[in-house]
Structure formats: C-alpha cells, structure tokens
Length: 298
Image 1 (spheres, rainbow, N blue to C red):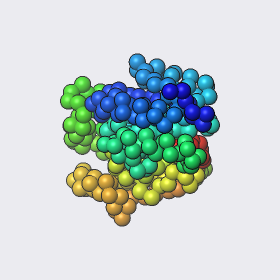
Image 2 (image 1 turned 60 degrees about the vertical axis):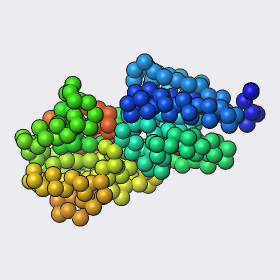
Image 3 (image 1 turned 120 degrees about the vertical axis):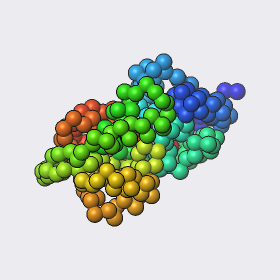
C-alpha cells in the first residue's frame, strides 16, 4: 500500500546488539507498526558506531521528518550528533541497558509498540517536546557527564574483557574502591573559579545516568541550565553506603553534596576521563555548555 498523502518519512536506526538482541526484536515489531500507520520507513543498521552515525547524518541531510532510534542511551547519543539543532525530530524505542532518556519520556523498554504508538500520535498531532542538550566541543549529550569515581570505574570496566554485563562494572567498582582517593578539581562555573577536592563531579543536563542513578536530582531538560553536582570527600565505607541513595535521589541531603546551576562549566582534574550518555568524551579538562531547545522529541 503506498504511503498516505500525510505520511512522514522516518529513518529507523537500530542497534541490533542492544539489550542482548532486544534491539533487533523491537525493530521487527515497530517497523510494521509505523508502516501500517501509513508512514514511509527507511530501516538502517550500521556495521559499527561510525557507520551508524554516517547513516544517521545521511538521513538527516536527505530531509527525513524524523530519525527514530532503537537502542539504549549510547544509540540516543549517536543520533543526537546527527539531529542536534536541526529540524529533524528524534524518536526513541528504548531497548538498551540504561535507557535514561527513555525513562524521562516515560517509555518502557518492555513495550516497544507503546513507543511506536507515541511516535505515531506525535506525528499525527504535531505535539513535540523540545529539550536542551549539553555540548562538549562539537559533541552533544542528553543526560549526565561523569568526571570522577564513576568515570574511573567506567574506564576500568571498558578495558576489561571479562565478565560481560553489569558484573564487569561491579568488579571494576570493587577494584577502584581499594585505591581511589579524592581528586583535586578546578571548576569554572559561569566564569567563577572554585578549587576543591571531591570524590566525583557530574554535569547534568538531565537528572539520571547509568540506568537510573539520579546523581543530578532536580535537573530539568528544558530549563536552559546545567546542574553541576559535587560529592566532596567521604570515606570508602560512606561512599558504598550512599550509593543506593542515588537511585532515589535522596543523596541530596548528604552534608558532602553540593550543587551549582550554570550555563557553562569547565571541569579540570588529574587523570580523569569524562563519560557522558555512557560514551567516552575524553580526558579533562572539558568544557560543557547548555544549548537550549537543541532537539525536538517525538
């Protein structure tokens, strides 16, 4: 059946490996749903991340109405590099491990058809949500940049070949806890310089990362500001005790918690690599600025 006159052109970009194959399975139910609604769908699947980004940018350059991704936060981050500040809307079918962007949108990775129906309704009514992005150089992220203990753990875990999944991060956490000490940071907060020691510094565009860790509790994706969170020195026992509070956002009452709301921040620290949306952004110093309303979400 040919597309309807009011059909939209959608590029559907899938990470087939997301969620141990959940991505491909979700794509296989979402694609016919979108086509049944009368839309013209271009299904894309990159050989690797670089190829997937190339396909996404080609689709945006071709003038598709929407780029929809099937995957986790890493896939969303990849798509942001193609759609940020463009007129192409971003759709999401969460199928990864973290899914912090999907969580913000109220999407359940166990129900890909509900995500498809949300996109269909948005395309039909024109109702969209415009959100801010954080920009580091020419790269964007949607959730949180980690630049402390959590980033050190991520760096170690990425260097490990075994085991796979969450257990790798658990082992990396235990390994780092044995030797980790507070780091000396320099923060430039909208031009004001602060020097301090901390366990971690996180720069939140949104409130959570890492599968629901609400490190930047209270951060909003549409306020034109970044939330810079500092956890000042605590004992290793206290760090382990505080960790579960991150899932509830109740760590904000801890006496070593500090929060700053700014439009731009430069984070400098020794031997730390910044991670944002779960992706490696590079060693400090890194400058992050908020780009208000940078992307439109279906």
